[in-house]
Image (tube, rainbow, N blue to C red; front, top):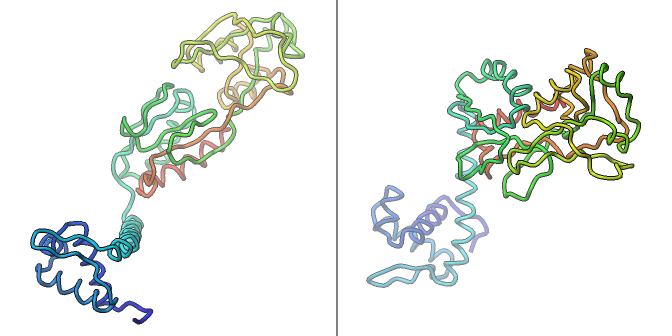
Length: 302
């Protein structure tokens, strides 16, 4: 037996795989555009060349022999790889297009993703971006999402993921508030301040502030609770108290002097900012280009 398969041998392998999958030469022939006789003869020539019987033949059915099962496992894998290669080449030859369903956390969506959509549309005008701004954790597969943006620690979801950067937080207040109430030097000092917390939509509970190193002696008792990140920033700018929010949310306010960071040596990052998608979804051109485009845009804002 030669170590190199010929074109005729390859056609026999294709006919053999189709016969195993469909259960008859007639069905395999229809799948391949051949007659039942042609499909059967292609398999017979393959058996002669390999010197083994690959199929059990009865008047009622066909099925692989032990040797046939071994060969089918390898052939099925090869044919799948060829189909994947053909699909990828097709994607490369076609401009990204179609509807893209995405879930994005509310504040990240408003502050980072939506402002960049015009540039994305100018580059990929045939992609219809359908974005859901929501802080609830959606079921990517069940709800039919092509892509989601997640903040914090990731669970083992079976999804593909690309980490964009750290989910950094800033503890801050307005200069007017700090002038009146003083500057906290350690997390323990926060018990003497008005601390405005975020309420998680998934649990209804206030967010627990995270610090590294020295910790407060007891959990902080919130002086106020809001369920919107942008409202937290507005409350802090208005002098209501101290907040701990994602750094990208208050970066411009700090640069403009409307807010002042506190406890910078203690504030802790909370996981990462990540894009997630169903397995193999990134092979679709519109998903792949969105991942590449927004990974760069979001990373620049973190």
